[in-house]
Length: 388
Image (tube, rainbow, N blue to C red; front, side, top):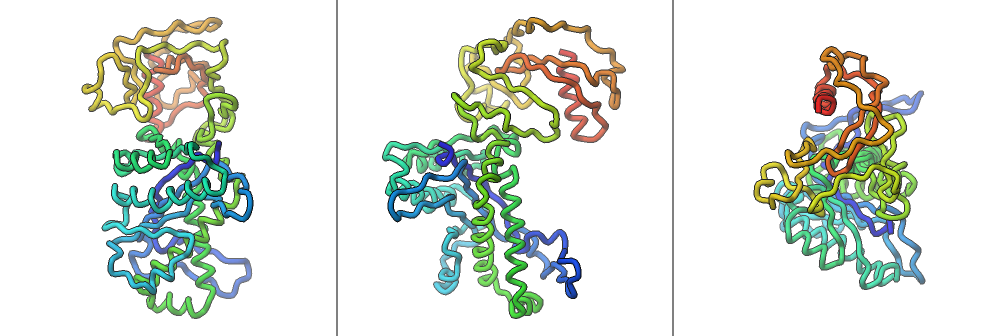
């Protein structure tokens, strides 16, 4: 169920968000220039965002159900000398955590599970939209705190299954990175502007009269309102999940048509694993690890029979090339001149690549690479494919 799929990610928060540009309504007699003392446009705290893949069902009776897990903010310090007056001023819908560098370490990650995920699961069981044996799925990147056994144990106790996304690819696979985190920060900037519309607040701002305590309180309110506003548009939230493949299922709706890849505007096809007519991928003695394939450095410690997918997806020496797909004709290797930077000789031609653990994939060369750094990297990948 989409509402039991969760994704967590960290977003650095400066005190001033959206200060890259200054704008106002046409005809405004006074335009406020964004700015404050130096340092406040740098990271002051970290937001721990966690979003569902879909809205939860309505609960019976009057038992409230959170549309999204509570947002958390991590401030710098221990929190032991914070006055009760400041704590009472925090936004009710924001969980406040403390860490020496305002980051998510192992202790902070475990505290987040206890303070945010545990109450969420308990409330949904009480509301009747989750059973005692219901399981949740949490997608996360490979932050040290989220790969540690204690974090996994805290989640397992709540029947939450942790799935770590492939290292180095999280910007393609994380719904929050697909736009949600950016939207939250933009809305925080809007909340700051609303607060500054009050002349008294503007005077405190311009005279640098805001204390560290004042800023922490304000950040919880701006974050709370921004997070709620960003979460209200379920159509948009669902798109973040769809575009990163977070809602794909192993049976039923494969969801491939919803995927979005940066720089790919043409139509593409992902083979349906349940379609018997596609070219079958090669078989391996052992499957890929459930979460993240070991790095190249740790591969030596693994069983020799296990196939490790390294950063370049190179085929191992013992791999046997799968049978070439029927109906296609292999052409001779292209001339060296066709592989030069800026050459259009291969544009419009088809490329068939035997992708490790996937099988034969067919695509079309749609443009020639320039000499930009990112294109040089892609060119190396294309050269390797063509020469192999």
